[in-house]
Amino acid sequence: MKLSQRALKMEPSATLAVVGKAKKLKAEGKPVISFGAGEPDFDSPPSALAYAKEAMDKGETHYTIATGIPKLKELVVNYYSNRFNVTAKPEQVIVGAGAKPLIYEALACLVDPQDEVLVFSPAWVSYVEQIKLCGGKEIIVDTSDTNFIPSIEKVTNSITDKTVGMILNTPNNPTGAVYDEKTIKELAKLAKEKDIWIIYDEIYERLVYKDAKHHCILSLVPEIEDRTILINGVSKAFAMTGWRIGYAIAPTWLAPKMGAFQGHLTSNPCSIAQWAAVGALEKAEKDVEKMHKAFSERRKLIVNMLRDMPHISFDAPTGAFYVFADIKKTLGKKHEGNLIDSDITFCTQLLEKKYVAAVPGTAFLAPGYVRLGYANSVEEITEGMNRLKSFLEEIN
Image 1 (cartoon, rainbow, N blue to C red):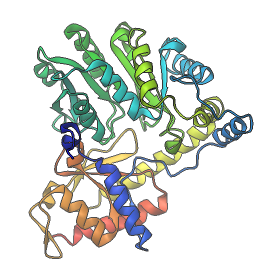
Image 2 (cartoon, rainbow, N blue to C red):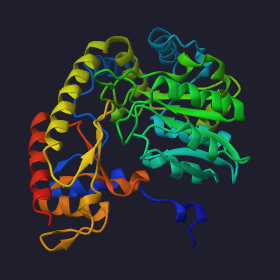
Image 3 (tube, rainbow, N blue to C red):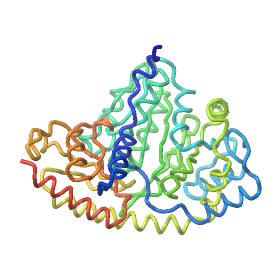
């Protein structure tokens, strides 16, 4: 039996691979601390649990509308109106089993074989794989030499007659960068001029720190509403990763197609999880604020500890919950006689020797870096960073 070319070309999720290996070692009794997953360590809000239980007690355990229950769509519309002054209709909202399938559904409706899609590296691991699954071609625009913010000149020079769209992610995974207002407006203007669409992934929009401010692209440039797909969800800000509820706001010409695609793919998102998301959006604002305060303190802790370590450098993140550290100075050196020849071997040795899990930058199209999440407790961050420092000090 043969595998399809699609399957053969697909790479597994590097973040899930790291988490899996770390969990395996932990199951063996090793004192593993993982900075690999993009997952808050908080419990889901009490209101989410209460609404889920109430939904089960009421028998809300059957198929729903493919694109989501009306109550949740209404809350999403209200959320964007109140938070960003963005006007949308409930029929533009597609609730999905997480943000990831919604991005895939949008791409599947917009990308034909050989179409080009701009991706700004470092980039989240699934963008490129999903473009490939749709038969498209990723065009990588490097941002590592512009503080992880896209250069409009580079973006413009990357557009060809085959370019159909771009994927923007701010606050950014893996870098923690938050795109500024000027850059977002320029990218929006460029998309309109070149007649291309934008998938605007703002799943981390509640997680910005210090003086940084997140901008929804449609609040800045409402005239590109007809070519923009907003991606968001309850996973990150509400600590509800396992419930698998994301949502998209798409133009009226696209939303029905995405909904039809989802109907064939998953039928609908989990009914109970949708009601949990209703509880979160209706009553968990104080929980979000409490978690944000904790993330801010953790960010400060990990940044201060990393600044005291040899061989590495980094830009202090202003969004999400990741630090993207440059470890190129360790390449060619050895740890306990073992050569470090890539960010992958760096992470492998760090996990095997110090039981600290990090994700290699290669997974994000950025060799020579590692991503360290700080969605961990203060105690884990402190112990994990002490181990990382010890590892770095032993490199020669």
